[in-house]
Image 1: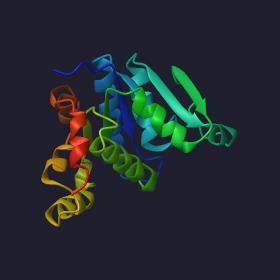
Image 2: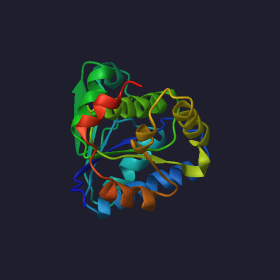
Image 3: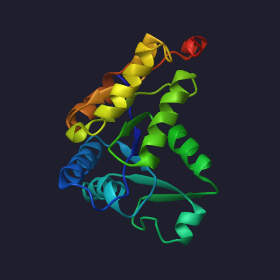
Image 4: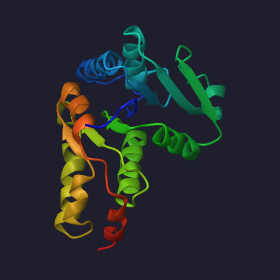
Length: 195
């Protein structure tokens, strides 16, 4: 069983999405707090980013937010987090969030969330990130992306082994269970990065 102390959660900043997504984010935050897992996220003050952070905090958990300085200057940061880390760039933000985490869970989101998820999948494919990656497929949101990844494997853009880089959960409870049970990735897999 993996030792999980911190989990990076990627998620939407939109406020106009279906309540089912907010419910899932709040449930995930509560579960993380109950298991004394520190949340690492992008420190946003709206959308699912705020919902998951607030749920952790309301259940006496800890949240570390990582955010570029330009976003703080815009007032886009959550001001009630346990710890706020300001960085210079989006690249530094993503690197630090990954470095601080023992696992990644992706909630639904737009381009930013999808980009973060695909980047961490790429890093794992290259042996740069070895921890569990869970796609929390609330309301079947990620079905088209998962189909695209399967297509990439079927058409030999990726190896069959690369399908084990990510795991899919349909509920927050399942996502939290998975981060404990997914084996840590073997860095030697990078030799299979090329087809």
